[in-house]
Image (cartoon, rainbow, N blue to C red; front, side, top):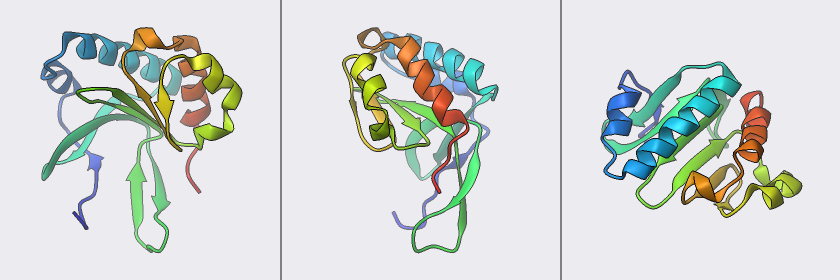
Length: 141
C-alpha cells in the first residue's frame, strides 16, 4: 500500500455513521463527535482514501513530515474510527506520558497515540475530554 495517503474528504459524516451496522457504535460515534467538536472548535471531517475503505473522522489538521521523507503530510489533531470491535480514538501526542489520566480513564487499551475502547460506557468521558483537550493543540514533531 505504499503511496496511499489518508486525506480529508468531502464525504458526509452522517452517511458514514448511519452506514455502521451496530446501533451502539452509531450512538457512541455521535457522542464522540459532539465531544470532539465542542473541545476542538472544528467541524468533523471524514478522512480516508477511496482505494482503502477504512475511513476515520478527524477534527482540525496540521502538517508534518514522516521520518525519512521530505514530503509534507496532513493529519487531523484529534479523531476516531468506529471499527467493528472497538472505537479507536486518535490523539496527537504520546498518551503513555499521561499515566495518571490513563489510570482514571477506565476499561480500554492504548498505543502511542491511540485509545482502543469497546464502548463509551466503559470509560470516564471527563477523562477522555481532558485527553482530547491536550491533543487539540499538540502535534507530532
